[in-house]
Amino acid sequence: MLLPKDLKLEKVLDQLPVGVMVVADGVVTYCNEPVRKLLTMTSFHVIGRNVTELLDPTLLERIMPGAKVNITVKGKRLLVWKDQIMLSGDEVDLYLLTLEGETDEFLHVNDHQVELLEAMMEFAFDGLVMVDREGYITALSTDYASFLGVNQEEAIGKHVTEVIENTRMHIVAKSGKTEVAELQKIRGDYMIATRVPIIKNGQVTGAVGKVLFKNVGGFNSLYKRVNSMEKELKRYKGEMKELNKAAYQFSNIIGSSPLLVQAKKEAKKAAKSDSNVLLLGESGTGKELFAHSIHNESRRAFGSFVKVNCAAIPADLLESELFGYEEGSFTGAIKGGKKGKFEAADGGTIFLDEIGELPLHMQVKFLRVLQEKEVEKIGSSTGKSVDVRVIAATNRDLEKMVQAGEFRLDLYYRLNVMPITVPSLRDRKGDIPRLARYFLEKYRERMNMVARDIHPEAILALEQYEWPGNIRELENVIERAVNVAENEKMIRRCHLPEKITGVQFRSGVRPLEQVMEETEKEAILNALRVTNNNRTKAANLLQISRTSLYEKMKKHRLS
Image (cartoon, rainbow, N blue to C red; front, side):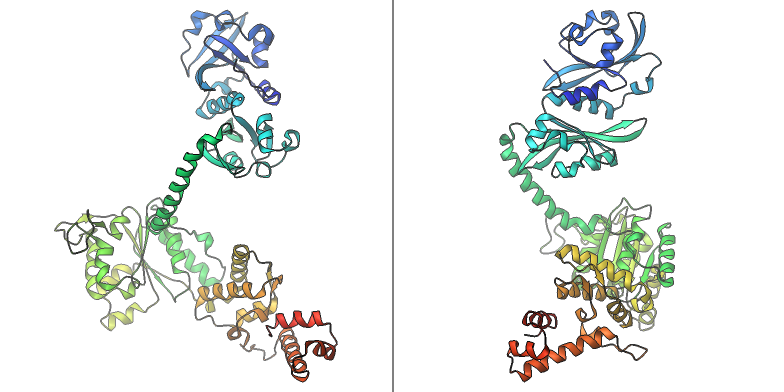
C-alpha cells in the first residue's frame, strides 16, 4: 500500500488547503484530512475502497490527466483535478479536491506543484527534506535523519547546510529553479537528489527535496564514470573559458576617484551601443576588466567573449588564429580545418588586447574585417559573414605610431570610435586603501592567513608610492605582504617591500612606528654583536626574555 510512513509528512499534507488523494489500480491508498472532511468520512472508510464508490464513475471518466471538472458529492459542489505520477516505480492517479469557489487558485496547477506533491507522496521510498525561503529545515523524514546520523527533532529549525552536506536546497529555495536527478555526495557516496521549489501565489516560499540513499553501492561504476567525465569536462571548460565567458561586471571595478568614475560612465555608454571601443591606458590599470564589463552590460552579453592578446601570438600564426584555416591549406593543418577567433566570437564580442603590437600586414586584413563584416579563412576563396563587436586595448600612443608609420591611420579611425582612458593608479591614489583591503581579503582567504586589516602607516606608505605597475603591482605587493605577515593579524609597514617603505613622506617626517621598528632591529643587532651572538646574554643585555628576543628576531627576519 502506498502510504507516507512519516507522521510529520502526514501532518504537512493534512495542512494543505486542498484535498489530496492517491489511487492505485482504482483503489484509494491515501487521503489527507481535507479529503476526509469533504467526503465526511474517516480514513478507515476511505482508504482501501474503490474510487468509484466515492466519486461518480461517469464523471471520473471525464477527468483527463491535467484537467479539472466540477462534480457533486453528498450535495457539495467540488472542483476535482487529476494527474498521473510515479510512486515507488508504479504509476498512480493523484486527485486534488476542493469546494467550488474555495481556494480555486490553488487548482491552477503548474509543473512546480505537481513535482512538489509527487516528491511528497514519493516520501515512502526516498528521503525527504523541506526548507523555508531562507533555507531553514521545516520537515525531515525519519529514514533520512537516521541515514544522516542526526536527531530528527533537533534538525528541525536548523539551516539545511548545517545538517546535509553539499546540499543545494537553500539555493533552490531562493532561485525557484527545479533540479532533477542531480548527483549529491553525502557521507562519501553519491546520492540521486531532486529539489523542487514550493510556489504559492506566484512566489517561492521554500523547497522540498528527496534523495535516493538506499542501495547506493550499486552506483559505484556510475560514480567512477561521472568522476572521469567531470574531470574531462573541467579540462574542456578551462580550454574554452576565454572563448565563451566574460568574467567581470562594472561592480568588479573598485574605486570612486573622479577619473575612474568618468571612465566607468563612458564605458557604460559604450555598452549601450555596438560601436568599436578603444581602451587606452598603462599596463596593469584594468583595461581587461572594462572590456569584460562592457560586454556583460551590452546586448551581446549572452554571446561569446573571445580574448586575443596580439603580443602573445607569433606573427606567423596570427592570421590562422584570428581568421582560421581550411583543411589542407598548409602543412600541419588539422583535419577539418580550424575556426578562427573572429568566427568563434560571432554574435558576441572580440577583445583585442595589445592592438598596437599587430603587424602592419595583419592590420590590412583586420581593417577588411571591420569594413566588410566578413572573414576569409586561409585556403578559402570565399568570405564568411560575422557579427562581432570589437573592443581593442593598448598601452601605446597610437597617434605617435601613426605618425611613425607603424600603425595604419584608417585602422586607427575605425577603432577610435569610442575611446576610453583607464586612469593609472598614481592618478587615483584615493582608491588605494579600498583596493589594498580587497586584495588582502582575497589572499587571506585563499592562503588561510590571519591578517584582517592594514595598519594606517602601511596605507600611508602605499599612497606615497608611484606605482609604475599600477593595480597589478599593488595586488602583487599585498599578496607578498600577506605571506610575510604570517600569523600577525595586521599588515604593517615592515611587511611591505623596501622600494615602498623607503619612500620619504612629503612632510619630511618619518612615521613613529617605522622609527621604533628600525631602532628595535638595530638594538638587537648591536646586542648580538657585543655578545658574539650569544642569545641568552643578548636578551639579558636588552632586559627582555629569551623568548621575546626570538620573537623579535623572527619579526625582523634576523637569523
